[in-house]
Figure 1 (cartoon, rainbow, N blue to C red):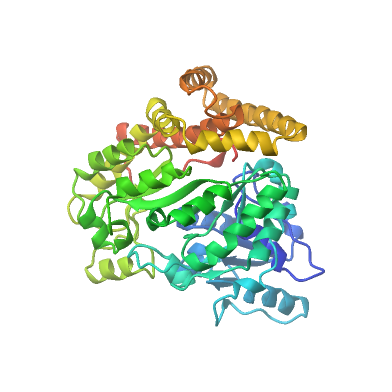
Figure 2: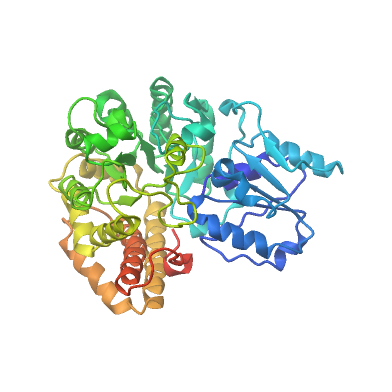
Length: 497
């Protein structure tokens, strides 16, 4: 579940009513939208074209049409003529102020931008009950904003700054309780760097540990963090005891020269990245990671190098993509000064230094396809689980301390629902029989007792999402269709998560 929408709902002053629509789980009924006074839209750069389609579809509605969020904050000019009002950056004070202005009959402004960064301790708890939780595997909760590092390509420090701001522990506990009461068993802490303020997070984690123990470990947690997490054994131990099972880390590249180029220096300080990843796994936390190809130090040999690094380090979920020059970032400024930006290209918006754009996009597409072949993906997962270590010990502990009959029944129905949805997704691709055989074979190869059926089915849904996307991209390239202008895969092609 996206974390921003329930918070936006919570920020709307009484007595106004809010309806949330997430295209990942339900279609937009443009006719039904005519009854609303305000229609807001948010999205990221990968959803830019779809955002334009939606805004064009809203023309003729009497509602005030507004846009905000990640992409609007870095490229507000894209929305000129498409909406009535644009919100730039954080909107925790400007959004409710806008609603009050409308309610009092005053004319709203065409642009809002907060003068000051949000004090996170003043935020209300997100309204998880406004979202259709039955459609989601996990809830999302935000603890902090901002990151102390200076990665050249990243827009986080542009939007939120380099001084991480955090919620009070009591706020986080209240939101975790609301997540539990909404029926979720998994929660993703959506911070761009959960450990950006290590002093504060070490004050938070004991509170989460105590809450988990009081309630029998009802929530499995995951988050995003930087690789220097591996250098703090106390922090790793507290995250493990708080029931963090997964952490997403921006590795970006196995090449030290590429990391130095993009100012990701935290990844190359101290011992090797492989040793750091091993320490995080040894602490009982599974690593998923992000990778980028297309840095100036990358030639066409980077593709095999990336693939070897991911396989050698058993990173099951590896998100790999081409470098993107986001507006307002230092990377965008540097490439613009060198006349290397190609903004009209939807798949590669700059001129690489040591290969062509076609080479970069096709090479990246081929790595993605290889990473999500079933044997490759599940092979990396299996190597993460054997030999048994803290991961299995933790599951045994949670079964003995947190298992209840209700939880067992809930797990059964969750598994059944996930299996049905996955089956329907495979059926829509005319791959039900082949897909079921593929996953049955992978299940038989899993170490006995290594994971529950529900956990395995969640892996299958995750794999199916990446498997279908990467196969479509690869087939498009093989069929000789221009890689520039490939239509996006619609959400109906994958099971809702």
